[in-house]
Amino acid sequence: MVSSTRFIDSHAHIDGPEYDGDRDEVIQRARDAGLRAILTVGTGDPHSGALERAIQLAEDHADIFAAIGTHPHDARLFDDAAAERINKLIKESSRVIAWGEIGLDYHYDNSPRDVQREVFRRQLTLAREAGLPVIIHTREAEDDTIDILRSEWSDANLRGIMHCFSGSLQLAEAALSLGFLISFAGVLTFKKADELRDVARQVPLERLLIETDCPYLTPVPFRGRRNEPAHVVEVARCLAGIHDKSFDEMGDITTNNFARLFGLESIL
Ligand SMILES: [Zn+2]
Ligand SMILES: [Zn+2]
Image (cartoon, rainbow, N blue to C red; front, side):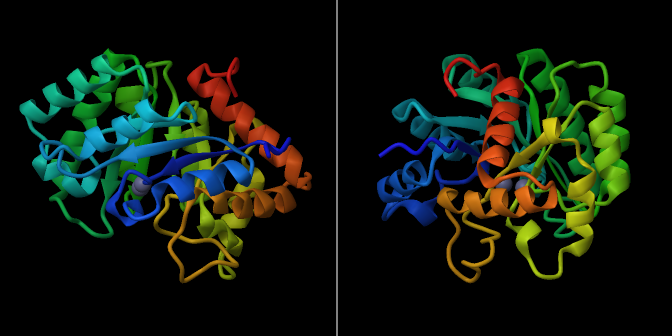
């Protein structure tokens, strides 16, 4: 049964091995929960075939789209061959609608920071050439993220998503001024996230998105288990309360925002 309530998981990793045993059931549960689309984000070594898995999933399902790019964790693996490969994959599949996730992660520092910054800049340039919005991952690197976006992206007109937002109001305001949408994940539902909920309250309705970032960050009340796209409704419920909207209204608002960003209004 298709529900009249509409939701979109704007950031998931269902192409990952965590779902190899039951991916079809996971997708079906998402549909049953009212999800109209899932954006699966291919990450990992750009030379390994990991990105192709996300694209294949999107090719196989009308309600799954793909984003591909090199995560800041893997920035040290990004080179000319990786750039060429990503570009080729994007040209070959209309199911790839965004370049990402890209950005800076100074929490884990899995790649040297100067390499992260360089690869972030390069991928912004490439995304612009490919004409795709970007998906930004940023953690404990707010100032550098904003500096780089201001210098490389402010006149791109392609916009993008600040994914799994967990930053300050200052970061949110800077991202909004650059035209970005702000996507909230299960973190928003955590007991200790009062500060983040205060930031979410300041984000205009037309800039809000919801996501799971599954398999990570399982929202309340499912914490401790593997996350999956169907749980995005818990983020919608929380965000609806914050903005004093109904659950259904928040589903419509975030679905329409996603559709507008990617020009998918006719199908979502
Ligand atoms: Zn991320
Ligand atoms: Zn992610």
